[in-house]
Structure formats: structure tokens, C-alpha cells
Length: 156
Ligand code: DQA
Image 1 (cartoon, rainbow, N blue to C red):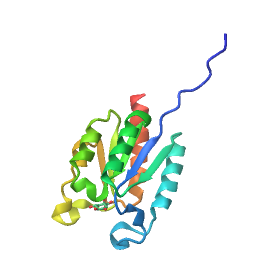
Image 2 (tube, rainbow, N blue to C red):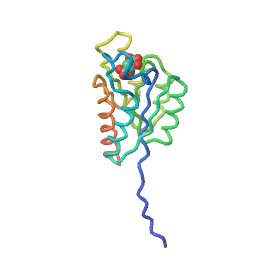
Image 3 (cartoon, rainbow, N blue to C red):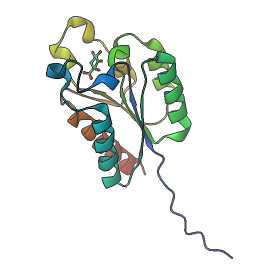
Image 4 (cartoon, protein in one colour):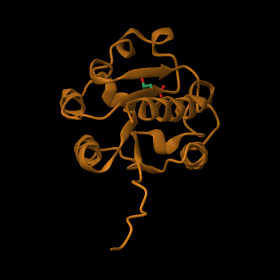
């Protein structure tokens, strides 16, 4: 009888980015930093690989597309890291989808929302998130990858 040698591979971490994050590095760099989204993707892939994990990285300016990506993560991902950008402050649809997930969700913001305008102090996404990282710039994404790796290790 053939011996089963295949190791069960952890599903990828979905790293989702909302509107205007495609402009990172150019958009208000004094607030969001000089690191581009392409650089953040590379850094996250390397960080995840260090934990033996892989990523799927998306950016969209469209709310429904982010809902679709979250629904895909529901069946094809091990965890979600999401910077919902402006939609965090407005989108109950994105919160609803997150609440339908049974995998860890880490919310990331480059800036510290609580140091900013009062309309940024509320994030609907936070209500559905496992944890939140904000104010650490691009490094926040890497800390989120570390957090996911730790959560997945503990829950194995
Ligand atoms: C952001 C903060 C949001 O308020 C803003 O709309 C963004 C970026 C951040 O990463 O700091 O687009 O999510």
C-alpha cells in the first residue's frame, strides 16, 4: 500500500487592502510613510515564508470586491490581515463578511487612528477583528503576520 507522505499545508494568509492604498509611498507620506504597497507585499511574503506560511495579497478600491475577497478567504485562507482603509469607518458590509469568517482576522492601520480626526476613531471592522495593530507604519503588517503565525501555531 502506498505510504501517505504529504504534509498538510497551511492555507495562505489573505492580506487585503482597501481604497487608496495603491497610492502608498506617494499619498500623504508624512502620515502613511514612503513604503509602497508593492514593497509591503514583498516584506509580508518574506515574513510569512520565515514562518513556513504563504500569502495572497490584494488591493481594491471597491467595497464589493473586498467582500468577494473576504468570502474567498473564508474557504481558501487560514487567516485574514486587512487594512480596510476608509471603508473601515463606513462599511457594515465588510464587517458582516468578517463576522461570517471562522478564521483569525487582524486589522492593520498604518497610522494611529486615535491621534487623528474624530471620524477615524470608529472602525466597524474592529468589532469583528481578532486583534488590531495601528500606528506602526508598514511594520504593522509584519507584526500582523507574526501574530497570525503565533495564533495558527497555538490552534494546531
Ligand atoms: C488607514 C487609515 C484610514 O483612516 C484611512 O482612510 C486610510 C489608511 C491607515 O492605514 O492608517 O486610507 O487605514
